[in-house]
Length: 435
Image (cartoon, rainbow, N blue to C red; front, side, top):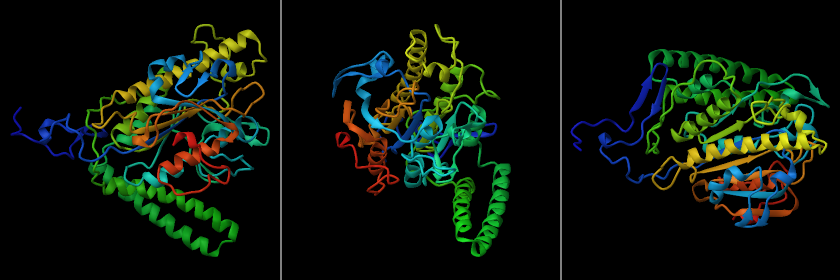
């Protein structure tokens, strides 16, 4: 093929209101199949499933790589070499809200306080080189009311950027797409970004003046507020002055802008959000993604599945009744089928030295083992991918009984280069079996 006509490696695919980084092409002067001169980035995805599982349908037999998948996990059969199942990891807190809040923080919500979550800690470490430090997606809006001492709305997310700041997921596919891939080089986009920057500058100046006069408690609150505003500053700066990034995808992203509105089809909605997270990794729009497959107190109706008649939360309180247990297991298997879809999608994307899955770590699980009694011991947890060499799938790892989930968080955090000897003071060490 002649290379007489070439385009820049910084070229973008552009459409109405959106742009995507191009992969390497022959017309850029190099083969699209050539190995990258720069190693692909390492990504982290955290995926939350609500309401637990029926233990006997989740638990696997055998240890190490010689184990048999359970009924719920059967959809992962073709991916068995790509993940580790971890047993004996325990959560903290009571009920759906507190246990959802602890899924990535290891801490129990007290009043309106929690702790910084794993995804946001990693985003602080590796998110500075991408347009978005992290992307948080979901499928259900916040619910109202209280569950014990805590608002049910707190179970809308597992992401916390400070001890009092929750990061709410975006549930509208088109809004998420436009936010991540809008055309930031257009004069209109630049004008809006410049205006937002001037507003942020004014807000920062006023907040700093107020902080100097405030009480110690209010100084702390204003400090957290300023941290949130600065994260907006980073996004604006990336719009006005996009950085030259060393890594560019080797294969061509193909994804149409989602239709307006929120899909009524439950399966379509979840897979759209999964596709968006994959696309955000593929195009290096972000390197940290979090997905709430549903609200932590989800009452989603699953009557679209054969043999299911009740809502997810209701069936999770099964009281060992055969019909409820069967429905509960069918829904859990459906979630795992969608996980298999995500992993297969990532495995299909070539990055030169391996796949997108090889260069990612995917933490998948629920904040409780069994909804019947809100059991928090021996959580259903999967760690998939190799994290660019940070992890090697181990099959089935059985940790010591009552190992804090925070030990897994600390293990991941250290692998991603964050030098800490504890995770929110909730860990007791790392998981040695993960290397």
